[in-house]
Length: 346
Ligand code: FNR
Image 1 (cartoon, protein in one colour):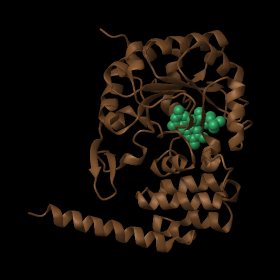
Image 2 (cartoon, rainbow, N blue to C red; image 1 turned 90 degrees about the vertical axis):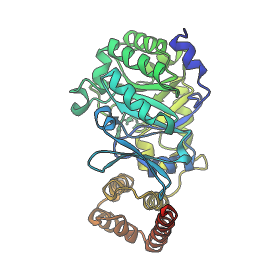
Image 3 (spheres, protein in one colour; image 1 turned 60 degrees about the vertical axis):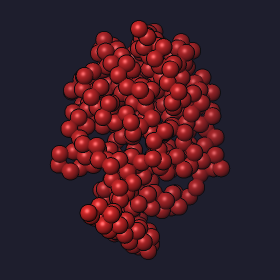
Image 4 (cartoon, rainbow, N blue to C red; image 1 turned 90 degrees about the horizontal axis):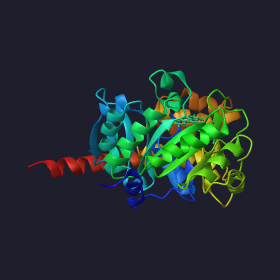
């Protein structure tokens, strides 16, 4: 029988070495943001954390009109929407504390994604109270059980994302134990469980981990003080001694940070974001949320107020002068729906 390590090496799929990734971000990491990050040069894009219990209730539905695959909850909410363009780049991140349920969800989505990631770093109560997220960090047996089950049970690479433990030694030994499960990579957010995003990132911890294991380590946590522009990504890579870097906030504020020709004006980036939101029928509240993150201190400007008042993607389009684009896409989609309906008739 093959060991978990051998299985991990077998994966011909997505490589996590020398990549720059869009970090998993609740509400931010939906399809429009992921596609935009890919356009600007991200190699790998993580979806927002999705909770195993909710995902396990979803149905996989091929959406022929939008040309997407949707995972739809019993209340009709689309929990996860993906498409061909990102299929070999998108990492599905889940919140879980249960190996069997984790595997059920991983098997539900594996044919549509490039890899499966387990969140082991979220310190928020909604995550930790169920034993998920950062709560897993104090339960390495559970970590091992979940990751082993996933590595053996799915055909795509499995990864996890952790925070650092109180000492270097503990952090290194945890990651060495994680490596033995056969995961393809580990993302390390260089902050302790109780540190806030404004605290400086501990590059020395990430570096120690990178030196101690042979799987790719993805450095994370540099957005605030270290990574402001594209060229800073390389500096963060060097400072942590890793082959790969993952960006959350810097990308949320302006996803063109992935673009090595320098950042684009955020106004232009917001327009491109809205176009994807319209094309993929993104939920308007989610579109608004992401635009408000990009507006940052301009969220109370006249444009910001218009965005906040908008209730639909149509109203958001108006705020940016994209009404014509909006109408054209609606016509295209309606024509496609009509064509599909007539071809389905006997
Ligand atoms: C996050 N983070 C996060 N982490 C994770 O593993 N799963 C998630 O769903 C989320 N959600 C999330 C939402 C938002 C709005 C932010 C800002 C952050 C944490 C994130 O991936 C990352 O670890 C930290 O933000 C540190 O990286 P940066 O921001 O310094 O690049």
